[in-house]
Image (cartoon, rainbow, N blue to C red; front, side, top):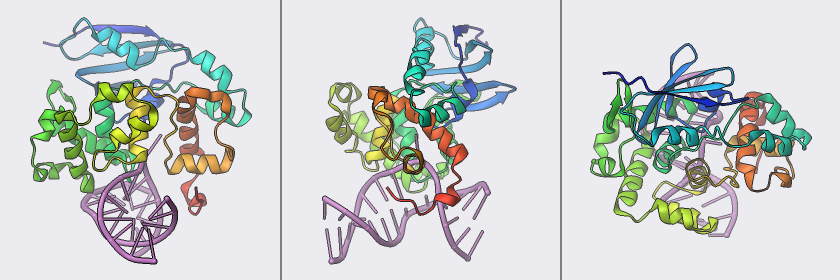
Length: 281
DNA sequence: ACCCAGGCGACGA
DNA sequence: TCGTCGCATGGG
C-alpha cells in the first residue's frame, strides 16, 4: 500500500526544479505539474514546492532516518543568504547568482554520484539521465512504482559486460563495471577517501578505469561534500575564459564549488556553444 | 552530412 | 609530460 509520509521543510528562496535539473543530479524526472519523482541512495520520493515550503513524500518504506536524510540532501538548513552575500560582492558572480539564485547544492550519496558522473563524460545531459535511468531500472532494486535505486556495487559488479548493452552507455559501460568492482572489493573506499587530503582523494578515485580528473572532481564535490572544488568541463572553461579570466573570486574560499553551480548554469543558458568553439583552456 | 557532448585512455614524440 | 586521436551514442 502507498506510503503517505510527507516531510515538510522550510526552503526560503529555493528553486526546486532548477536545482534538480541543472546538471548536478540525474536521478529525477517530472511526474506531474511541478511534481518530481526520484531517488537518492535507498530512498525514493515525490517532491514539490509551494512557495517557501519544500514537500518530500516518501515512496518507499519510510524509516526513522529518512527525514534527516532528505533534509541533508536538499541542503535546507544551509545558510544560502550568507553564501550569496559573499558571492555577490563580485559583480560578475552576482550576474550568475541573480540569474537563478534558487539553485542549491544537493548533498548526494557517493555511489549515486560516481555512477552518474562516469556516465556524464563526453555526453549530453538528456542522454546522461536516460542512461542513468536505464541503469537503475535494469539492475537496481525497485523502491516504488517506477522508481529504482542505483544498483549496489555488488549488484553491478556481478554483471558481465554484455549485460550492460541495453543501457546504450557506449564506451562507458566498462567504466561502470570497473567502478562497481573496485568499490565492491574495497579497493576504492568511500570512508577512507573522505579522510584524505584532496590530492590523495583524487588519485584514489582515479584508480577506477574511466575516472579521470573531471569525474573525480565531480564525485568529490557532488557526492562527498568537497565544496572547494570546481570541476572544469567545457562550460566552465568557457565561462572562465569569458567572464572570470582570473578565476572565481578568492572570496569564494572553500565554497567555490557551490559558486560554480551558478556559473555553470548561467554559462549553459547564456554562452551559446557555437560562438565559443575554439576557445582554449 | 557534420558537430557536439559536465572526458578518458592509449599512443607517439 | 604533453598533444592528439578514437571512442559509443544520439540530438541539433
